[in-house]
Structures are given as structure tokens and as C-alpha cells.
Image (cartoon, rainbow, N blue to C red; front, side):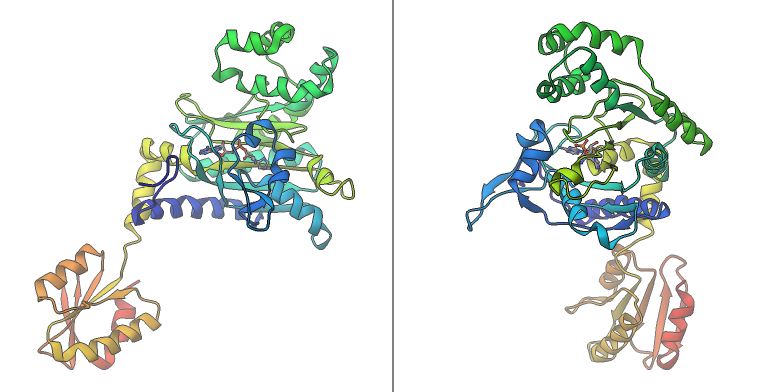
Length: 412
Ligand code: HAM
């Protein structure tokens, strides 16, 4: 058994993971994003200082053999900001970068939340206008659309940290208390009302009032307008109850949810205009925003959604393990079979043959079980080879010299 909250990926599970990754990459590239990666292990300090209290408590941390305090990455954003602070001069702004890291958080394993997961991170760096906020939210929406989800299935709830920091200023809350208050607001939907009242104290009444009344801003309305112009406005709504748990957000924040409210957040992100400056001790100041979508909730939603599931099944069925199986009907043909197998593999075909001696029906069974479209049989007719189309059941004798050409024509 793997450790609690960790997964074994058997080949079928990994094929599903790859399907998700392929769609993520495809849509991110449509928006001009390029892929990068960073180290899975970083200095502990990077997360203690930048991610905020909640994640700091969930770190997989240890002292390495060189005495360094390190942690497995619980998220990608601090690494990205560190990399950008060091290398941004080499790139034209804004940067459109994406990455698919596996990240680690010591959370209580539950539905939709594990101790490792893969995340697509998309970040836009070096552009301060709300146009960038809308562009990024549109990308998040398009990722879900690519799997077959519609505005009836999912919703992006968009909010603004500035709305809340203005509120905290007007209530004269000292700045050192802001992170705690914002975290309490972030958790409020998942906690009973009494608990919120207890944590927020005198702030509880005005906060709950805002929850009921709702809130807005010109900036948020502009973002909605932008999404409507693209024809994806139905996916989005303004909802100031979203504040996000991470410490570094400074402006627009958003989270994606299933409309039915059955699952935890599918994705989340926002603007973090100070993080690059903080990581370069003020040497570089770059506005930035991004989001991450995890594979756990998304995978569950795909499996429970008719269209998304059949799309996944269709894609997996189209990708069997092999194209061709070489049936060796006589032991003395083994060397000839190897020569053909090698030639076909050199041309890129996926091909298998029996490694030990096996009767002919068993070999045909193996061919079908592995999903081969063609079987080639080396037997009595040699130097002719029987080529069988396994789906159609048709068989054709082909001369050895014409075999490669014949197969290339037979397989699209
Ligand atoms: P986050 O909201 O902590 O944001 O995580 C983003 C997504 O990762 C969540 O919406 C969820 O799908 C998935 N996720 C988080 N924790 C778990 C877990 N324990 N198990 C399974 N899935 C999980 C961030 O990580 C930010 N760094 C996103 C970002 C990028 N902000 C700016 N750029």
C-alpha cells in the first residue's frame, strides 16, 4: 500500500493522467503559454515566508545531509517568483508560463484532497491591467470546456482582495491581523457560523453583512464584460466571499467550483503583484497573476460527467499498447521475425512478438488483448507473410520484400 494520501498509478490510471495533462498542455499553448519546471525541493524558508500559515503547517520538511532546512514543494508559485526574479531580464514581458508539477501537502486525506497531486499552473507575469486578469480567467474556463464541461457544470467565482483590504482599513484592523482575518473569511464557507463569529469577533457582523449583500467593483465588472465579449460570461460571477487561503495575493482572486457544490475547489488563483519584489529584496518589481488546477477533483468530475467521461474513454480506446503483433508460427522463423520487428520499430510502429514459445491461438489472443490492429504471421508460406486485419478479420498474403510498404499503407 502507498502512504495515506499518495497514489499508485497503474498503467490505466497513468493513461488517464496523461489524457488530462495533454488537454492542459493543448489549451495552455492556445494562449501562447510555454512550459517550464523548477526543483521539487526548495529551502524551507521560501514557503514559510511566502505561502502563508495554512500551507506552512502542511509542509513535508526535513533537514538534508548538508544541514539545510528544506521542504517538498507544496505549490509552484514561490518557485516561479524566485525564478522570474533571477531571470526575467532574458525574456520579453509579459511572460506566459505554465508548468505541471507534482506538489505535496500534509493535509487530511479526504475526497478531492490528497497528500500529493499534480497541478497545472498558468501564470502571466509583467502585466498589471485587468485585461490580463480576464485573459487568465478565460484560460481557466477554456481548460474546463476542453474536457466537455459547460456553464451548467462549473462556475468561476471572482473577487478582489483589495475589496477586503479596504474594508479592513475602514474597520481599523491593524495590518498584522489581516492574514488571520482573511484566512477566517476564506474558510467561512466550510465552517459553521458560530465558529466564524468566534474567530472574527467584532468583525463578524459587518463581514456576514457583506456576505449577504454581496459586493462589486468597477474592476470586477470590467473583467466580467471582457469574459462576455469572448462568449464565456455564463461561466463567471462576482462573489466577494472568495479571498483565497494563500498569503501573497494582492488583487483579483478567483476559484472554480462545480455548480452542484459536491466537490472542493477545482482551481484557484489570483494576482500577486508584490511576490517577485519580495523575493528579489525589492530589486525587481513585476506585477503577476496565475492560477492552478489540480488533477484530483478534476479527475473525479470527469468520471462523473457523461460527456467528459465518454470523451476520456474514447481517447483511451484510441491508444492501445501496440499496433502490430508478429505471430511466429514456426521456431525456425524467429530470426526472420526479429528482422521484420526491428524494421517496423525503426519506422515507429509499436510491435510485439512472443518472447517464449507459444501456440498460435495464444499468440492471436495476446495480439487482441494488447489492442493490435494487425497481426503478421510467419509460417509455412514463408517468404510470404500473412497479414491479418484483426478488426475486420481479413487476411492477405504479402511477399517479404513488399511487407513494410504494405503495412505502411494498411495502417493510417
Ligand atoms: P491552491 O488553491 O492552493 O492554489 O491550489 C490550486 C488547486 O490545486 C486547488 O483548487 C485544487 O484543485 C488543487 N489542490 C490543492 N490542494 C490539494 C490537495 N491536497 N489534494 C488535491 N488537490 C489539491 C495554489 O496552489 C496557488 N499556488 C495557485 C496559483 C498559481 N496562484 C497563482 N499562481
